[in-house]
Length: 414
Ligand SMILES: [Zn+2]
Image (tube, rainbow, N blue to C red; front, side, top):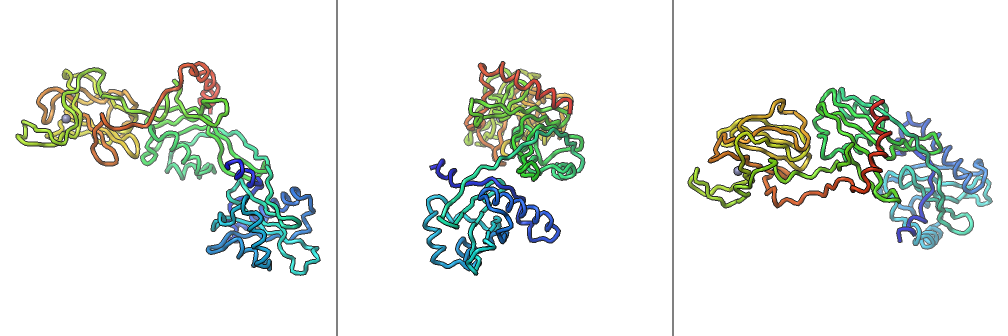
């Protein structure tokens, strides 16, 4: 089925964004796009391009394949015939508002109405479907070679991520891709001046000239809160389809939480919505997991994140709250003291020491009350199903480390 759909599609011809085509200042672009399409089509069909009247437009609201063709004086009976003939290879209902299309009418046709001969529909910037109804009705499939150019850039955050990317004339998609790669590491909503990233990636061009967006990101390093976070794309099988990003040691960037914020200690009280607390003399839900350990035992951040609270309250004592990503935050209560250098805004890596076990606030003995927030609600950390986060397979690790060596050198020398 998939192969079938694949066969139908797709002529890789070029085009740029067509939403812009109605604006006069884009006329030049529009013209060059049109020329390219005509040239491509001429090549594909081996017809001289001057034999066609070329109309380029975008699918309007309420437009259908039939409505478009009828505007070119094609009879409904003919449109029906075409639709039926191609229905297994091209579903005309897939035509979407805003997508560009091109209609070719043959200039020297004896047919005085110059009915359309070819309909080209661009489903995305790289893919076209050509429906040819000159002789027999056919849906054409062609591969137009897309070329890529390797690019290395550095962007330093000055105004905002998107603005700084725009100032360098880079694709905004770069920010989106990076925010996926670094979803567990970098809070893209709270970047600071001086944060920066370097990235090695492909720009994709059609006909070597027309920019069609970004391709693969191969390697990057995000300088975030003064720390470097590397990411390398690595194929996990020979097809290259299955890949993931890992850091310079082969750890996945999709972090799993540590099971506990302490290297040692014991769970003294679990998350329990019906716990009776002596101190209060009544049932009070316990929204955390208590890990008992001697005063002064180091408390670790259970995943990469940003410190969003460092405070004292009479209940919590000294506590820290870390935001890990859009979904998860964790909180660490009753600390005897905070670790040096930890402030609101500090970027912490998994395993970094953020404070020390104590019994400040309402605590009957030395422990850290570990609270786990998911989408703004406190949940049981021990029951929370975490996304998988396996490091690179041990068998692959030597190859991986060899593979990333030159990428890392390149990044470091940008
Ligand atoms: Zn507790």
